[in-house]
Amino acid sequence: MTRDGETSGLRFGNPGSLEVSKSRSQKNMDISVVVPLLNEAESLPELESWIRRVMDEHGFSYEIVFVDDGSTDNSWATIQGLAEAHPNVKALRFRRNYGKSPALNEGFKIVQGDVVITMDADLQDSPDEIPELFKMIKEDGYDLVSGWKKVRYDSKIAKNIPSKFFNWTTRKMSGIKLHDFNCGLKAYRSEVVKNIQVYGEMHRYIPVIAKMNGFSHIGEKVVHHQKRKYGSSKFGMSRFVRGYLDLLTINFISKFSNRPMHFFGLLGSVTFLIGFVIAVYLACTRLFLHVYGMTRRPLFYFALLAIIIGVQLFSTGFLAEMITSTQRDKRVYSISEKLNVD
Image (cartoon, rainbow, N blue to C red; front, top):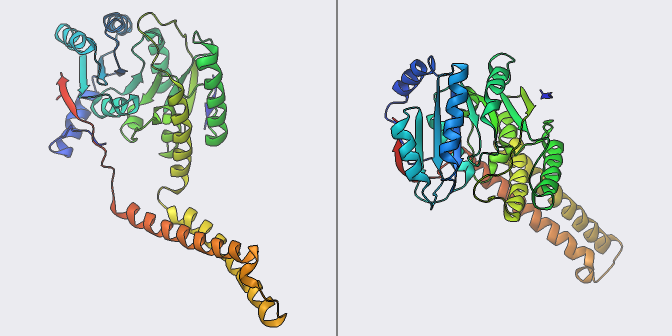
């Protein structure tokens, strides 16, 4: 174990009354389990039964929040049956597929537990890990605990090797010493999920986002990884590529989201200064050394290009500052149905 130091269509009326009602319910709610899913109808009854057994054995009060990310199989009908039979089951259904990050983001908005557990719906994450994860949050004082699938049953070429490279890069860029950033099995203090936003493919970087928001007590736990029992993997190389683009995005946002001029302005000023100095040099050689044909020299065009790029970068920083000060997140995810959700 190691440690490291589209807003939805769902709307609430009075934020103040919401906080009061949530604070009351949280006194009797230990754990919220958020399960994003896409076409996992076969595994859902077994997963719900497994989670329920673990919770009952340890005396936890709990809720299970299924977020159907636009499934095209019988997943929603299965969830409806589970919700009717078990009041602890809650659910949201997207009108179309948005992705795992939006599904987690919407699930986080409605959870009521003191500790929030996320896991995948494919039965590769073991609910038997929940009690120890709960203990690490409540007793050991972690803000976030990420699972580490030390022994994996995925294809080495398709997933293991890219995953190791991805995790190594993320560790180096973020400074967070986790072995498996992309593990779906994670535990959070409730305050963490209520103070972060997850979009795009950012679910891979929730520990990084949490650290950006001041939740730096991050740890990990070796967890059991099981072979997929039903369905097929949703992993593809396109997600791997998008993940790296998101890593660059989040690294930039973590440093310059509130001060883009510090990046674009500095880079633009330096580029402009280089071009300006070269232009002055060329002008001096023309005036004092009587060197003619200045506009035919490659150095002249380099200076001109540097000045233009410098002005554009500085202007970009200025516009970014204006946008940052006036705009807010306007992403919208359309939820078609809800079960047992106020």
